Image (tube, rainbow, N blue to C red; front, side):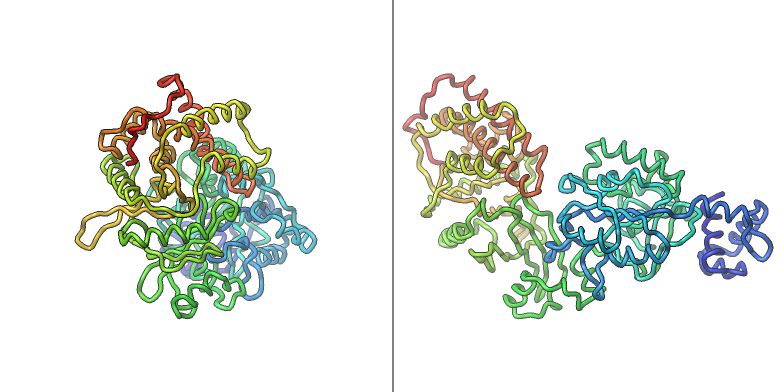
Length: 596
């Protein structure tokens, strides 16, 4: 049976259609196609005269009837800024949480065997076990992957099973006591982020590029198709390329066809709640719309919350969360501290740094509208045409190094330092006994040796950025069309050797030794003394171990950095070897060292 025929049969059964025209009106198929499909269904014994169901169809329904449901609710919902402290599935609309609405709709359909995959703030879902007798399945790696890996945790349940995103609001239930085939719910409109699209034959295929039909996040998997999906889950979860994939990727078979047919949803019957504005659209009185960030914006600009629009998350940095919003015809960016940040940076010190920068009268950094040294909230102007430096573009890297040198030449001073040895000790204390590298103690002894070399070098210290990664160098277009560089995010800044900033840029860009040498030459315009280059190599190694410990502490907070941490540890080891091979003696740099 073709999927088109499944759809016609389903329409006859669910809508109690008695004529071809009624079927055509419900499916959107041409009358001729409906006539041919009904003829086939009657010839094959699925429908009797007057479109009554036959025993064959009843048996098919019985074989494919729903037995259970899996609700995916493990993600942190980062796009829900400014209210992403609550798991999305627990947001309320009309006084009812999204997940409880789904559970109640399943119960009314006769589905009581329900599992919820949890991760972020998993303890907040515990009440569901007593109230609804659901099973909680933990995804212990929720911070590293996406919903594909969450579904893999419940793969054993995929047999005549509904799969549902926990952040979906269903105006009416999509669930039924009888299903005849697998399906996935999509909407008719285009979404550039979708990986699925609907063909003219109402079949689902993978959208190879450029988006497809908006995905609703709800599917039904009958027994036969569940086997395929389980196999796909095992294969895809083992592939690093699918680490951040959505679970719908497991529906795509090797021929780019999807299991099941397209269940096209019209209007607002099904609404994924992905953003603050999605929630505001569905329930402008939801208690979850209240947020300290929205209250701050309203007070700062003298507007009501309804006048703050275009709210969405930008990709979160490694220390903070970023939210875009528009107000009074201009765009802004609000920063809020990430997990465990209060132990990593001082907002009072950051405020002092911005005051020092403002005193230069130069366009060095971002334009700050508001900065609270107590809470860490910051509001800056948003440059819509700005983008981060491309670390693979030598011209842009050279421009960033010129900007960094220009900043260092101001020789700014504040009353606090960023001392690498002290910070390394501090991060080691924070991460406690968490360290995956068996040879860490040996590596630490090597880094102590490099720190002694650095400390023996004469240095003229000034304000350094410290977190001078390429993402923090913005390429901003001026009104005349030319381009300038701005350096943002100064929360780690302090008085230090300015050459630390060169090393920090390189290790975040994952540069090899040749690329690091090229970056050093950009900064020094080809005139870097060997002793200074040696010192920067030392900084590369020391900084690598510093951020390794930083990653381990953030890991204790539930934020994993995986490959980044591994690469930083490799810098600590490799550049110790470079330094000791190139310069076996622990000789200090010459007294003729230049500052910039």
